[in-house]
Length: 288
Image (cartoon, rainbow, N blue to C red; front, side, top):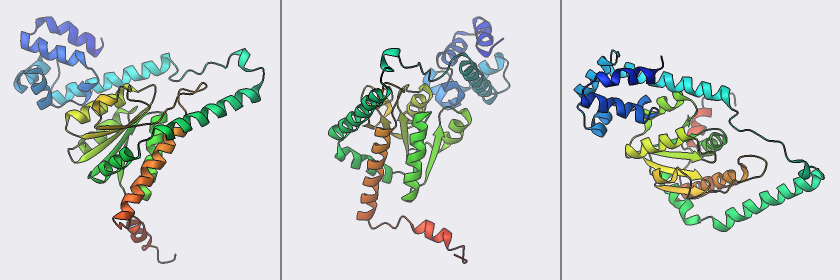
């Protein structure tokens, strides 16, 4: 019997308030992995004591034990999904495109060039500097993404590190990575949510959770229509559509280059020595 079947089996024998608690659990299975008892009480209008009583009646020794089972269930479902489908199915190019491979590759080159040109036509440099100010005004920067979006996080993390900006990175495909970073999401932190198609749902949920906690969210995505947009204080855009893959990574990388270059300019204006920590570290090696 799965966790969901267990809850559904016991629900009819509970009081009205207790059934409302179970309804809340079943409504958003992913959120149950990290919601706090206080948050659940506030959002359901049910006392913490009633929630704990419900957990006991459902057969769990504590609220933490309940959340553990939800995390385990989510991990099992993700593993099942991985075995059922390929996350990025790559159909072969149709025969009519293969008559002249060099012509096809030239067309793709032209499409990449057009995307880059489109990016530079639309980029708002004022917003780039506003995003930089968000970075500088934060005590902690947390990057979040998955797949290609995580690759962008990784590159952004490296560029920020060279400018003396410490960051934490969440791989939203890994539950442990998410849970380890949740305590870092405070009102003085900034979540940079990177979400390009296929707009991974867990990245969006992390952004939603951060917004609920009063954390500012900066989104890096492909358009205003991206599902991450409602949870962001600001979004920066880079078009990524390509005929061969789900995304091209070239324009997001240009966006990261512009963002970190603007940060370099801001730090230079403030006469910040962002290499001071590196110099201090290497001073420990007298043989150099």
